[in-house]
Structures are given as C-alpha cells and as structure tokens.
Image 1 (cartoon, rainbow, N blue to C red):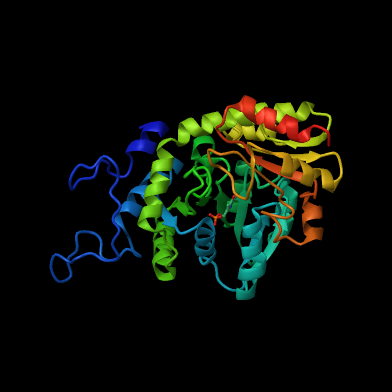
Image 2: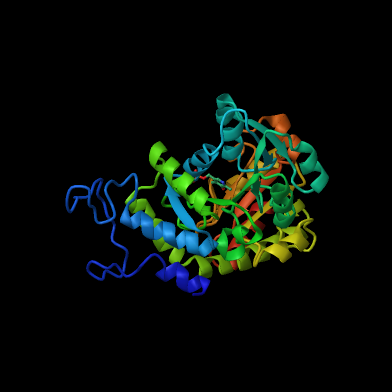
Length: 380
Ligand SMILES: *Cc1c(COP(=O)(O)O)cnc(C)c1O
C-alpha cells in the first residue's frame, strides 16, 4: 500500500468487534482475563492498549520500521530511548537540536553518568574525531530546529556503522511523508507527534519507531517499565491527524516556499533559512534524501532586537506561540522561547541569534499570510 492509504487504513482498521470505521477509544486501564493465564491480547493499558496499538502500527508502517511505540510526549519518547544506554556511555548529538532535547541531555541525563558531545554533524572528520571507545549513540535532527540545517544521513550512518554506534533520528520536522530515515539505515526514529503527525495543536504526544526486532523488544520493555506511554484518547487524536498528513504536508510545503521566497526579497530581512531555497547550504542534500522540504521557515531581521519584538507584536494571522506543525500559523522567538534552555553563549556559538524568528507556516490562504508578514515588517 502507498503512503496515503497506509495513513488511513493501517493497524487493522475497521475495528473487528463491531465494524466501527473510526478507531474506538479503549478508555480502560485493565482487561478481563478469559481464563487464568489467558487474555484476549491485552491485560493492562500501560503495557499495551488497542487504540494505542493502531497508532503504533500506523506510524511504524509509515516510517518503514519494525514496530512503533506511542508516548505521552516527544520528550517522554526521547527519555525512554536514552535509557537504552548506561552510565559511562558517550553520545554524540547534533548541536542545534530542539531546546528540550539539549536540556534533557545536558541537564538531566548527564547526572546519570551519560556524557554528551554536541557537534555540527556536517563533516565526516569532525564526527570521527569526536568518537571515543565509550561512544554508543549518534543523535541527529534533520532539518534541525530552529536553524533548518540539513544533515547527510547516509554519511552519518556510514560512520556510525563502522564504529557500531546506535543512530537515532528525530524526524519531527520532516515527517515520514518527506523523509524516512530507516531507509538510510537509521536504527531508531523519534517523533514529537505534537507537531505535524497530529497537526492540530490539540495534543502532546511522542513516538519511537524501531528498525530491528532486538530494539523493538528493548523499547517495549522500557515503555512498560518506565510508564512513559500515551493515553488512549491522545492516540485517537493523533490517528485522526495522521489520516490527513499527506495533504497537509503538501500544502504546508507550498505555503512555506511562498513565504520563504517572499522573505528573501524583503529589504528588512537579513537571512532566510529554508532548505527548499537553492541558496540554503543543505539544499542539494535535502533534495537527495527528502521528498519535500517541510513547513518551517526561520529568518533573521537585519535590524535591532526591538524590531523583532515589534514585528512579533504586530502579527495578526500568525500567532505568537511555541510549537509548530499545526494547521494554524505560528511565529516564535527561539532565543526566549523554544531554545531558552540553551545558555546564551552556546546559542550564539551554534548560530541561534537574538534576531532569529521561526515561522510554522500553516494552512491558511498564503495571500493572507504574506499580507500579515508585509504589514508586520512595514515600518520596522
Ligand atoms: C517539540 C519537539 C520535541 C519535543 O516534543 P514534545 O511533544 O513537546 O515533548 C522534540 N523534538 C523536536 C524536533 C520538537 O520540535
């Protein structure tokens, strides 16, 4: 089956019990045993739940992986994956990852004896130099948040395989509609389903997809042992969102490209970061490994920090809010919002400046979006 069909049919739909076309929400903590030691496949909803299972199977198929797991949030998914490691292990991570990922690694997992090196994953030599005998995992995000840097997955996986490192790709920005990291040999894909997979800014959720049976068993064990799983109703919302993922992603991309081209020509704008632009340093790699460039556009204003605030206050169609990937257009200021957990000197070093603004281009009519940007940029 093709992607669009999987998004609507995967996971054994329609429901076998009564033929419900919409996946039933099994809002139950526990399941009656048929006999001592015999269940109908489910015993307790932390371990597994039928609504969650449909979502997990759907995401796994969309990513081309062995199995999927649904978590309470993207961070719950990441926290669970980090528990595949043990004290003393070293992790190499992209340096401009999501702010919450940086915080989890640097401020939480470090206290448990994990060691992290944050690195721009653009050069083979740089990555190879950072590998030590204790290195066990390579963590990448492409396109990255918020700089939209593109990482050459084939190159990174090639290095990882030579050194027997586990590779994890955060595929939140691209979604499996545009990028399927497991096809390039990545071991684990993680998602914040809060973003494009759900797509409507009405739930927080996360997911992990595994590439091997061994990892499937380990992640299933950790999810159950740690209790990081998603609730049935939240799974149902994400399932409903995924049904329209392909059409949404197409339109997000079309609108984002129009916005990026508009910003590029605007005299107040210093720099536009969108991998779909030919001027983007990662454009050729993105074209090679992705089927599309996504819906997030970041840009820098060439004026003062006050102008950034004025611009954000003047927006009318774009809302000033964290998060991304919903039908509604959002604008945010990484330095004080999504990436405030990074120390200022670290942010500066990786290029997340105070002038940087991140737009999640939604599905409103693009003329209205451009007009909104035009009036907000006017008179800065
Ligand atoms: C939002 C986000 C996360 C964290 O997900 P939550 O659902 O907010 O916990 C992780 N990675 C990326 C790229 C994100 O954008």
